[in-house]
Image (cartoon, rainbow, N blue to C red; front, side, top):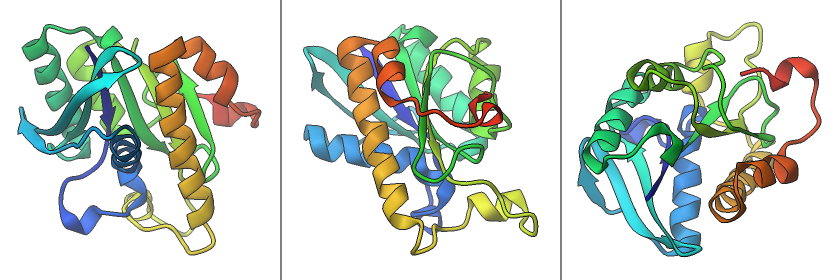
Length: 195
């Protein structure tokens, strides 16, 4: 079984914020694949089904972003899976809005949710799909920025990014992470490619 895990914050007040991009990608995958995310287990909202003949679980941790690793760790222990069986989807301020990056492994890049997952799994070797939310303006505090919402001008690019990210996940499940990297990674400046 593969776990496709989108990161975000659970309360209604966070819906539609930049930091909940991972949840939005799970919503898109759930809708397109007709796998409802309607169960609660181990502090997560989950949905199970089959994609390309493989059993898949969509996951939205309900532990809040900075404790995402606790939920991921508990799921892996319960289902006797390893970090190689997960795909983590999350927002990234180093990428322009709507751009995506697929990676096999890497550091947290300053993302507290990913940092917590690395801490609890004791490895950074897991697949991830990063979705650009744009860099923080100089006059904004990072927390306020990621917990803010997209402007009207950014919405189309964001929706495109969510669509590309969901397609990238399906490519990973079907043809592997290398195929997804070749297809979806876009040429950007060198510093935007760092984890």
